[in-house]
Length: 153
Image (tube, rainbow, N blue to C red; front, top):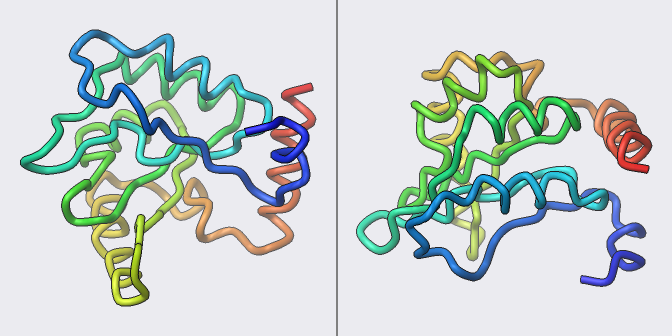
């Protein structure tokens, strides 16, 4: 998207929607996405879909460290077929101190209930409420986004 359009949005999630069946390491692609100054959350990071697509590979500790450095979040895609990031990767994200965001990838209102699956994964990985973007107040989210944008300049 045009950076001018993105800069006018309140919050921007960026995600990969092509080359999702690659088997080579995609670390540099993830780092480049996180370094995009207009993105605050990296959505459905692996692009995994159960029994359909394995998901992309990366040096996850390095990706999570970059997210921490830039104070950006990675999404827990709560949709049952995705469950992306999984608990093992969420534990690595917790160790790194990465912020996470819960997203349902809902295409219908009834799918919003999938948020419970992502919350369960976050709890199992022992991610603290302070690191989950969804638990921030509106004022905290606005301050965080302003901070991330300022750091990206």
